[in-house]
Length: 178
Ligand code: HEC
Image (cartoon, rainbow, N blue to C red; front, side, top):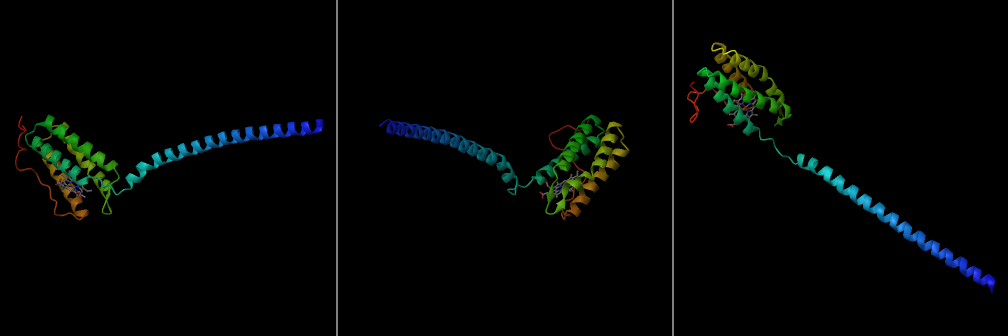
């Protein structure tokens, strides 16, 4: 009789230990699942921008070219009237825009646009120098040289029909004469 009681006790203890172990295991397992789920979520969050980047989103190069034309036009007008302060302002805008574009690593229809744009930087810098030195003789020459460089690039990117030239008239709505 006592032996039987002992067996029941052992059995009861074993089943109790087993159930504790099972509960413990399921808690640990749940934690592991939660951890994995969180990991998956962060992985998805990290990979999202990469997907949009590859989503054939084109760089708005045409808009930036419009900016270049706008600043070049205004710099040209200011230089023509020897309004050096204003010219310096626009040449600086030109420098910043060209510099920004060269850093974008733009490849458009197989043409290395950013690399080609970095070639005009020395001319823009020279225009800056002419402006700072208030050099009315060199400024128009450098300006013509810059526009030649713009057009040469348009030729090398198979857009020879885009031809920029010296502005013939003032930009309406702004004072250029000092
Ligand atoms: C990489 C060589 C390159 C250089 C250097 C360059 N361009 Fe362009 N330009 C382009 C390309 C490429 C386009 C066509 C962009 C597009 O596909 O929308 C363009 C388009 C243009 C357009 C037509 C878009 C519009 O807004 O009307 C103008 C104007 C223009 N460029 C002005 C200039 C001026 C001004 C300069 C010099 C200060 C210049 N570009 C220098 C490559 C160049």
